[in-house]
Amino acid sequence: MQPARKGEAASQKMVMGGAKVLKQVDISSAEVGAWACRTEAPAAPQAGPRRFGAGASARLQPYRVQWETEREHDPVFLREWRSLLAASSGPEPIYQSPEFLQYIRATSQDPAEVEILTVRDAGDGRLLALTPIRYRDLAIGLQVRHWRMKLGSLHVGTVMGSAMLGEESPAVLESLVRFLLSERPRVVGLSLPALPQHSACQLSLHAVASSQRGLVACMLNGWRECHKIPLPGDFNAYLAQFGSKHRYNLKRQIRLLREHAPLELLRIDQPGAVDQLAVAIERLAPSEVKAALISNEKFVVMARQGLLRCYVLQSGGMPVAALVATQYGETLHLHNVLTDPAMLRFSVGTSILYLAIEDLSSEGRFSAIDLGYSSPSHSHQSSNRVEMRGHLLLYKSSLRTSALCSAERLFGEWLERAKGWHQAVKGWRARRAAKAAKAA
Image (tube, rainbow, N blue to C red; front, side, top):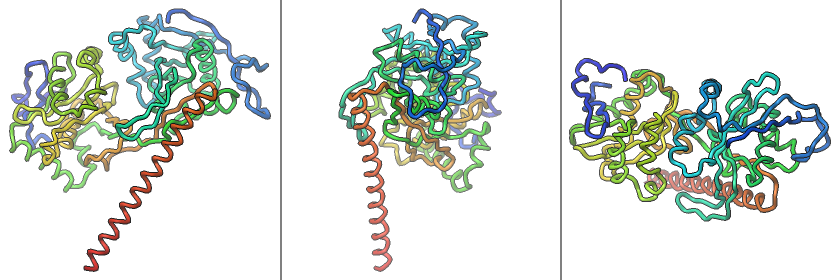
């Protein structure tokens, strides 16, 4: 945090549990082992795709694909890893970081749950690409909001962060996919849950699937909107994106909250502050959200790794809103917005986001808040950037897998059409009502 401005220093203090009171809100402050593998370069265009795993007689590419999980604490390897991270433009680098891997190691009972797969230059050993692979059973089914009917599951290797770190050319990714699916026979495919539509990784993986008979690329649930709130670095510059009326309304909401009861914004980023977050979750979160959230013990581990950054807004000493979020680099990843239904007239969801953005801006290092898959209804939506992402499954072709994926994909497409029809009917009814009112 930057030093407090004059008049605010006295209002900043520590509260029990280690949560930082950012301000008494004032409207004036605005596996082990390694195997070497030479892989073949894509052959010249042929009449049809090559059979996956077949030894075509193409010239060899100088790639060495191997597991380097045993090197996760090696300082030299960590420097290489972090160098790729720093140059990455992937959607979720937090899940590709050494810190998140250590979080998984501390909270998982299966040490083989995550492995690190690398691609190196066979000549000089230079690290070309890296990805942590997390093994899990991917449930396939039909879902509408919180209702879901499971059709089956597939054992997949999830590409953490939904992108490769480093080079993402078709040749590099083909070598990586070939190696993984041959070394781990139980794995039926690669899962990338939040792959950007126009990314190099997406184009390369579809090129690999097109050139390899026996590999299929399937988009589960289609392309969906992901929202980001850009942060200019200065809070006043952020507010300048809005008109004067919008800025007035934001400040008025805070003023009304202050008049209702004493207002405090708590930042939860230290292990000792997690109890404050637990109280807020218990009071504010619906049962289905509580069931989906991680345990308090995991929140503590995440805080120790420097990945946790949540906010709790208290009115009269009681939590009325909370943001459940994680941080990495220049991005805050917002996972849940929790609000007290009894305080909705004060727009507490919008208010806590406004105050959190003010705090993030004060540090000067955050460039965006990533809302992930969402359809935000908050008043900051006009400043959002929208990126289309989707869940890509690249799998070994089989009748069962194809049937499961097709069922989920087709249901998702039907659901999107149904939503469109619903919106069209609503619009028609609204126009009809307006016309009737005008005629009267």
